[in-house]
Image (cartoon, rainbow, N blue to C red; front, top):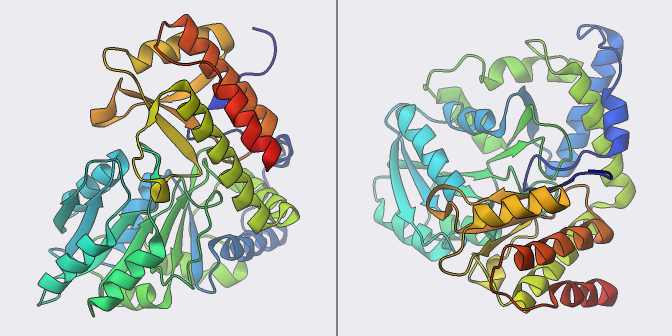
Length: 385
């Protein structure tokens, strides 16, 4: 097909041309002075994105690696963790915790809402002996299009008078949704390169509070590659204890510049606007979003439920073959029941309208019951904004 492929999955996301150009260069000495300046520039810029005065470490890994790192650096074998299963990625996180020797207590949900602060508060109040050492919450559940209000979770922990750490997976949230690590009292924030940060896959991050660093001093879960100690020992020099993804760091520096040129508030407002337009289209089509509560709607992606008896994967296949447009699949118990529209990262109004046009035409071609006019509804939102 002629023209550019539309990659509108919830990650990996579109990589800006200027970021590709920044990465496209010869590697440099990762022990030399040029690299030291690059490393320091990336670490300081990432602190501004995390909105923290604490530490940030960079791993050459997927987001799952940073998820494991957050646990092994703060906890000990047999420690209790409170997990909230808001979707597929929260479910996976629980599996990681179990495999490394933690005792998990899981608050189950219907996968159509964010984490319930009241349920967390109740579980912590019942934990009289403080066996729970960490509360683990997914900020933005990529499988469902539901986000969780993190200030409410922090308040729930504080109101229970509980000392548990608050560990947050914001792999598909950071860079798309407002996340104020220090102000909201988040102890560890997990992020990945390939979502709102507009980079290729391959890098993952931990934002670390002072409280988390104190917990790190006594944490006894085995770790080597993931250990914060060696990473933090060289941070002031801009170096790493192993060979990092040197070329990706040039991309990180470029992304930091892009965020600061657009302005963080403008980045979040853009994501909010695109998400609202997408939901308007879904409503006009007569379809339903997975997220059932408006306050939990994600601004990173929208997961759309198929009418009974119709295959989401068949629809995605039609749309890919006819319009060269990739949409996200349903995961786990949502497999073949939903499709996901990513509108995070390097996306603007016209890119979104191209995406929604492809979906609307695909619904018709695939014989999926719907009403016309979704694109018109989305354009009205964008024009008003």
